[in-house]
Figure 1 (tube, rainbow, N blue to C red):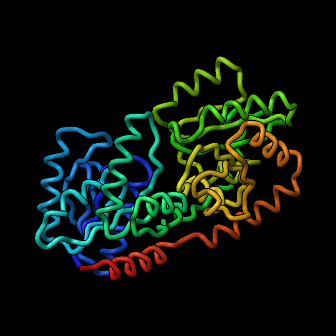
Figure 2: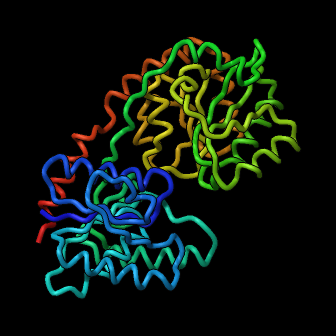
Amino acid sequence: MRIVQLTSTSAGGVARHARQVAGLLAEAGGQVVLAGPPDVVADSPVPTAVIDIADRPRLGDVAAIRRLRRLGRSADLVHAHGLRAGAAAVMATRALKARPAVVVTLHNLPVGGARVQAVARALELVVARGADLVLGVSGDLVARATRLGAQAARALVPAPERASADSDATAGLRAELGLAREEALVLTVGRLAPQKGLDLLCDTAAALLRAGAPAFRWVVVGDGPLAEDLRGRVLAEALPVVVAGRRDDVPELNRAASVVVSTSTWEGQPLAVQEALQAGAAVVATDVGGTREVTGDAAVLTPPDPGALAAAIAGLLTDPDRRERLRVAARDRADQLPTPADVLDQLRSVYAGVRR
């Protein structure tokens, strides 16, 4: 089967997933082309095509769709990742005489203002009515696509490879991060973008201080467009938060943390939470999107509310036995997360079901 894996973005987990899926299929003997922006297809282990579809509509999309149509003529199936790529795949292939099957994986809930939401709604209708199958990385995305008339199912996304931690490095992290002896390490890892709930994080840190929680230092690892806004608020409110930027020692940080926290306003299958489970961390997370589908009972889940999050974090900081039980549950849950082999099996079944 000749398969095109298409993504319209080079940011975050969507592009990583498209590259990983392309590699898995090629290793299994498939004829695969990875299509997307230049930085996605660079150094790809499979043949590539530059199809640069922007995150927002632009005139260049017309040329990109034409290139995609030419590519689709020689494909049996186009698997697009993301709403913009999915709509482009439908529009590029629907007029072809020998139309390839189209599968679309939705990785994110549309967010933004009224105009962004209106465009997203139109694109969702294009995908729901034109794709042979829509896969959603969380149950709410599947339900949303189904309501719009799509044939939809939940996508499996392979958990990140479990990373080993350097125990010597773990021991020195507290001093490096400037933690006092009595301060607990609270950790958040993720892209510093609106979806990650950074205002909620700051509100929760302030709520912990007001409630007289045990001494803590909240370390935020990652970069993104809201990094300076976060630093500004931390400074203005004198919050015990360290904006640490990108780091290569996330496994050590996960193991060193007393509590790992996700304050996201929505998630699909959050990689940072999966990495925390694999590290055996005590996790507190907002109960949004597909987070519960990832953690099961191996995390404390709360509404996206600063009081609820603060109470959950403080409860773990004062109860070491409960933290240890959560650590054990996290490691057990990590063993149940999807593997690359699981994902490959699902895709083979999906492709066989929609192949023309």
